[in-house]
Length: 363
Image (cartoon, rainbow, N blue to C red; front, side, top):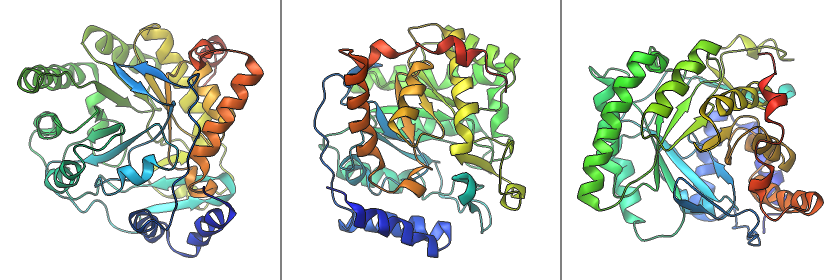
């Protein structure tokens, strides 16, 4: 069980710069310094989404375990699933340091990492080593900054990890790779989804199984941009959406010094915008397409609000910087208590119950 000492250890990482602290946390998970946290199974939290049986709806978003170093240790913290990456075909260093900034007064983080990772081969070797392990591990795929063909890079990701990924996330929404978000434009998105999903069909025939593909979008889209993504998502055999990535907005921040740093903002300040975009997308795609809600989740109440706004599953990451490694287990237990209060037999019964209110939120 993760107790107050683990929380204290997490806060002690604040004496280090954010990127050093991140590396130390990965090392702690590798060595078992951060203990496992058993979460009692609650069948009311379990559901099947995109054909995958999730034990609970709380997952770790991509960006933490970029190189697939600790997926099993992460799952032992109480998460129902985890997502590694973003992984690009070739290793790349990312943007110049410093490139992560804590906004402590806002409980937020700004990063401009730029898909720093060790490339396909390193992640493939680690995921191959755990091939027979249990647990849901998604693979978030991206394109190299200097690639001549971004679409081809995503196709390479599908082919490389097809036998290892529980699901794929096609990440076209990071603000830290120049031009990447241009793939959200309708024509570019159609070409990308055509190629990625065609590769999925070919790999499914080869492997005898169909691996779900999700598309991760930005929270800074216009209403027209949301319309276009919804149109392409529903006209392709896409398995779901992830809403959303980090934002370029700096609205309402207390820390106006760090706010001047370039990059994507995550953590608590992203909750309102990301939840509103989630609801707006749910209203466009209808009730059947799975959506994973991400952005600013730091409590069971936040997670449930994402679900009320239209999410089937919820991911978090940046809020663990402030709440520590016990956060996922705390949220899962808190959701069980909230279901007791709501007197429902499945968390799915609460999905969309505040959809209309969030759809009407002004961005």
